[in-house]
Image (cartoon, rainbow over all chains, first blue to last red; front, top):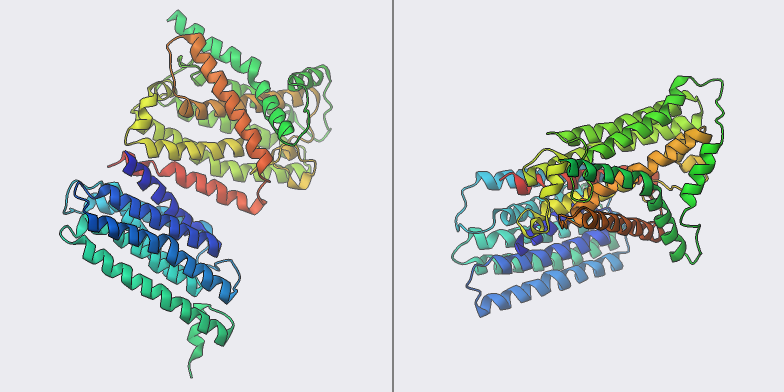
Length: 212
Length: 307
């Protein structure tokens, strides 16, 4: 019952990420998605939530809902870019692509034989949708920061899939990915700052002009 | 059986008598929030009575289509009300798939309003008709899909059964997210179809920004009264589609159930008043985005119902 509610919210947040036009709302959306994913995976871990997995959940929740979004907001402030995302694909088309992605992930989950049983299939579909959302943000948005957000969103998807796919040691998978993303975002925010100082913009499609 | 017919006729009588009152609740709420006293609560009735006493003036360029527009608008909405269950009782006419008829009765009314607007040859009215056709083309599939979703959740195809089977317990089941998505989609369709604020401003005086009002600029007197009354009935009809989801409480006694329905409609009107006082209308170019969000919401139930 509660997990259905969280899945519905997660679906909405994903569609919001597809359609949002502002940097700030994108970062806030990613933070909300992280929060929902952590809540969902706490709900879905059937029965045996040990002390260490509690600690891990809380730590990853703090990192993904507070630290990473704050880092991104800070990068946004220091770079001082315009607030809109400048998409390669328009917002309304993106929204309908998001709907298609949602349909695809639900269809995919129905088709896939999943190990671990017992886990709410709609939750897995929502996690799959998060991964697709992340990929979409990486591919279809112009600013380098939205790519960092895309990685974070994709990480949320992996995080949501972990308890159902990696039955035996989901903790290791999650911890590894979380570390990767943390370092990735950290490095990204530094690099974005340098790109900005060097070239006065962070449009990735213009970086290819930088050949010697 | 006779009791059923009595109940459905009672529902229609309530609609005919009290529909304009919803508008005065909205206006009173807006007035109170902005610190004014507001028009008398019976003002919509006074306006209707005055318009009915007036004669109509017809431009020499218009044909019978212009005169048929308001009548067709009123008749189709009245037909829609006959299909809607009120207060837990059954609708006057009910059959499998009557939600299709409901949607398309509203569409026929809109079609005639648009034709009447085009018939005047006024450029403003053509503009209004253009916008109305565009936005309603986006909100119509939303309404239809949402109703189909309700049908799938409750396992029935007639509006009476659909709304009869939505009880308080539905919200505790796994289908609850589907209902909430449909509710959100209906809310947006409700605001757009009734020309309320995020989409259209009912009190605007600038023709360039009008949608619905621009189409009825040339109507006056009794025709305008018909249009206003049809608008109030449409507010009532689409409002019932929403309140049937928010307040799914049934006592089994006609008067109690009617009171619940009336109270929920009044609450909805207050909510619209609050929405209208708290936000400005969207830029015209942003409206399709809002409506496509509504469309996406109305499709999401599929993921819960179809496993």
